[in-house]
Image (cartoon, rainbow, N blue to C red; front, side, top):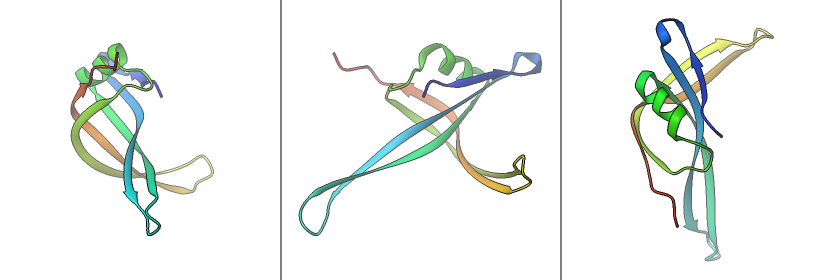
Length: 97
């Protein structure tokens, strides 16, 4: 998905997006199996501004950051747990021609 960017006071930006990673292996029958996992990504400040300007759904990126876990209560009062990657740097890879 395209980054969801929000601007807070002092013009500080937050970008949220999801990325997919694929893992391929051969099962017991020798068949290729690909498993996809989705990850929540958070970018602040300059990284968020760059994501807003340069990233769109389908882009291939390399990220460097740290895992962060948090929890919150949803609108029904249910406690939810979230693990996100907080990005320090990202690099957009060239698209195939």
